[in-house]
Structure formats: structure tokens, C-alpha cells
Amino acid sequence: MAIDLALCRRERPGTGPRRETTHVIASVHGSSEFDSLLELVWVQGRLSLLNRVDPVRSIVLTSTDMPQLVDELEAAYDLATTDAQRQYLAAIRALARVCADDRGLELHFDGD
Figure 1: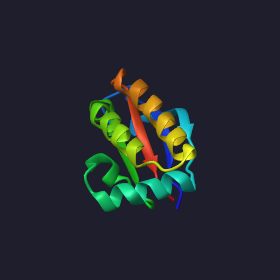
Figure 2: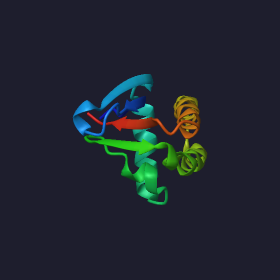
Figure 3: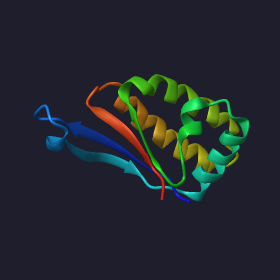
């Protein structure tokens, strides 16, 4: 299981969903370190957005979700046991902060 993360811009030039396009702006590739940290988060069950991240499905979070996600990432930072986990969380947090400032951006967690 490896969960990739992508910061995307969704463009809707018209009113129909067929005209919608998504462009990846930045990404963080999945790591076993993040997967093991997520397992700890899931066991605790108290971080609702991170609990929705699925190793086999995708989840899309919008800019309105970012304040809660940043708070949850900071809480997950306390659960991190390795420097690699902390670096991964810092990378996600940086993308979440960029997403929070732009309503046209989304954060995609993509499972295998």
C-alpha cells in the first residue's frame, strides 16, 4: 500500500462537468513510512480527515478542509516515530497550507 498525494487545480471553464480538467501542481509520492504512521492514526481513530484516507481508494479534500487537515497533521506529528515520518508530514502540511489559500486547489490522497 502506498498513498500518493497531489496538489491539484481543478478548472471548470463552463457549467458542465465534461469541461472540467484537473492539473497536478505538486505531488508527494507514497512511502511505507507514511503508511505505517497512518496505521497508528487509524488505531487511535480521533483524526477524522486522516481516518478517511484509504490505501486503495482516492479522497479529495478542498481548501475548506485544510484548517482541519493542518490541525490533524500536527496531531499526527506527535505520533510520528521516525524522522522520515516527520519529513513526510511536513511536506503534506506545506501543500495543505498552499491549498488553504486558494479555493481553486484540491488535495488528492490517491491509494493504490
